[in-house]
Length: 327
Image 1 (cartoon, helix red, strand yellow):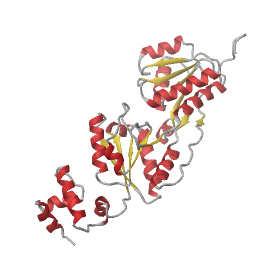
Image 2 (cartoon, one colour; image 1 turned 90 degrees about the vertical axis):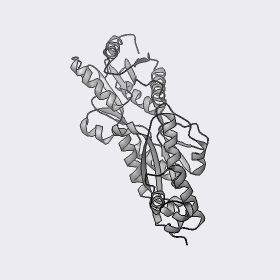
Image 3 (cartoon, one colour; image 1 turned 60 degrees about the vertical axis):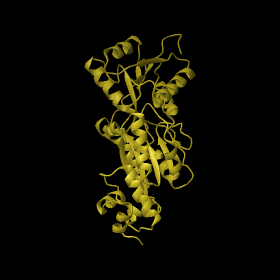
Image 4 (cartoon, helix red, strand yellow; image 1 turned 180 degrees about the horizontal axis):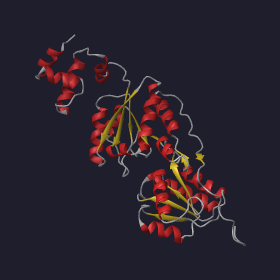
């Protein structure tokens, strides 16, 4: 069995450099780290259990997660990641979180770096623009894309049924008797989830033979409020809970009563939003179900189904009675 000192001499580096490589500490290049790890594997170096995982000498219990750095500012992502960490812990796994640049090159580089540590699996939350991951990353372990589909062959996509979410929110407002329902998809119309929730709204409105009223833009813009008024809306379905809360603030500041004059509905229902706005009507996002699917994928168990979207009723009012001769 080779010692760390002998390993350092073999690689032509200091013992401190070997220690940094084996414990994944900063201060050395990726090429030097990989050269030391390869030599350790070749010569049978027996480090502590955590390093044995990194060298591939023991089954890893670490699951890497690469997310855009900005995502940690949103309660939604914190709820998603903490739920996954708690769920996989029941299977003896731990989540190792890594923040990445949102640009494609920076995100791909972060995935490559994490994959080199040989985790049990790699979960990614792709930037809104989407991207394909390096093939080398997908070949080395299971790669799971959450929330956004990844087109890279071999990546496992675990996605909520966003169309069903959009249809459920719209259906709730229709069931209350609303016929002039506006959908606010937000300022990112090209985002996959935005397009899918919009499609769910459109499907529900088409099935009810009603006019589809879509208002694009940020709710802080005056033009959005003007378009809501011009549409004669009695209800608004917002892409997310934060957007719904921002709209409610704007409406009340403008003298519009919520829900008496306009019912507002969002999506997500994270615990933080629920604590601060318990009366907000919303569709509960399937955080726990996605975490269970993640654990099942990592442990090679059958995939549990996603639940039917749950409507959390709140401050929404019945729609006005239809005018004579209308549906």
